[in-house]
Length: 580
Image (cartoon, rainbow, N blue to C red):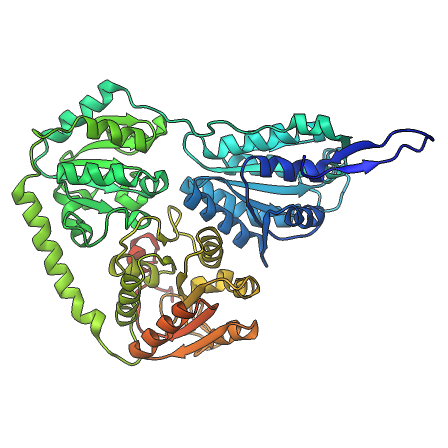
C-alpha cells in the first residue's frame, strides 16, 4: 500500500494497527491501474481526494469549470487508449461534468467521471441534503455504464469495473459515484490492499470470423470504383501501420474523416480528401474503417451518395449493432480494427488487382483541380483577413510543425480548417466530433498538452472560444505550450446582423472589436492582436517557438462567413412572411 494511516488503540499496551480509508483506497486503486493524471474541479466532498492524489504522485490538473475538465479527460482517453479521469463535486458540478461524459460516450472516448455525492439515506427519502441528487440515476442513460460504491472494501472492484467498462468493446464514458461518507470509512490496511484489483487485458482483441473476412475481400475485389473511409475509430485504434499497409496494398483511394486526418498524410497520392464529393457520389464499394454512417456521412444515402442502390458497404466496427443502422452492410466485419485490418492484409497477396486506373485518375484530376482553385484564396494578403487567408497561414505553420497538435472548433472556422489544414501524422487533429458541439476547445487543448507534451495550436471561432475561454487561466497556471488563435469576426457566423427593432444587439453579434488577447495577458500569458496574414504568421511562429501560453486575437472581416458554416441545411428557417 502506498498510503496508509496508523492508529493507536486507546487501551493501554495495545499494538499499533495499520489502517487505511476511502480516500487512500481510491488513490491506490487508480495508481495500481496506471492512472497518472486526474482532471477536475475541487470542492465538497472531493477536495482532500485531489490534494492527497497529488501528494501520492498523480498529476492533478484543476480547471475553472467541470465541463472543460471532462473534455480534457475525454481527449486524454482518445490519445492514450486509457480512461481519462474527471473528478467533480456533487450535483451541479456532476451535471457540468456529465455533458462531457455524454459527449465522450457519443464519440467513443474512454473516460471515467468520478463524482462525490450526497448521503444515500437522505437522498432516497428526499429530505433535502446538501446538493441532493440521485446522480447515478441521472448518469445511466447518458453513458456506457454507471456504478456506485458504498463500502470502502468495494472501492477496488468499483474502480476496476469502471476501467474495464470504459475501454472494452466500443469505448465510452463511465460514471463512478462516491458518496461523501465513503471517503472517511476506515478498514485494516492489509485487507484494503487485498481488496484492490489490477485490471488484466481490459480491452481484449476481438478477432473477426474468417468467413466474414473472405466475404469482404470478395466484395472488395469486385469493385470498379472502391473507396476507403477512415473514421476517428481508426485513429483511436493506433493500428497505424496496419491501416497504411491495407491502403497501399490495395491502392484504393481513401477519404479521412476529420479526426482521422494524418493516419496517412493528407498529401498522400491516394488521398481523396480534396475530391470528397465525387468520391462519395461515384464510388461503388465503400470500406468503412472505424467510421459510422451517421449524419456526418449523410446516413449513407441521399444525393451525397449518388443513385439509390449504387453502393455496397463493407463496415469494420467492434459493435455488432452498428451494422445496418442506416443502410444495408453487405460485408460486416465485427472485431477490433487492428485485428480486422491485419486479417484483411493477410488475404491480400501479390495477385490482388490494382485499383482501376480510370477511377484513380478521375479522383486525382478532381483533387488537383480543387487544390489549384483554392490556392489563390489561401495566399491572399487582405486586410481585414477572411477565413481562407488566415487559414492559409495556419496551414503553412502546421506543415512546418508536424508534431504539433491542432484543436479546432467553430462554425466556419471548423468547416474550412478541416479541408485547408493538412495533417501528416495520426491523432494530431482534435475537433468537435460526432455531436459537432461547441466548447471542447480549451479542455481538449489542456488535455492534449498534458498527455503528449507537444505544442498545441487551438484554432477557435470567437463564439466557440466563449464556451471555455476562462480556461486560459488554467493554461497559464500550468504553463502549458498552448497557442490559441481566436478568429474574431464579431459574432456567431458573422458580425453584421442587426436587431430589426433597433432595441438590442442582434442575437448573433458580440461586442465589436473585442480584445481576447487581453484575457491571456491578464493571467501572465502572451497576447497578440493581428489584422493581416503576415502579422498572424509572425505571431503564431513566435508563440509556438517560445512554448509560452499565448492568445492571438485574429481580426476577421465581420461580413466573412456563412450561416451555420457547411451545415446550414440543418438550421431550419421560416418560409412564412410576417402577418400584417
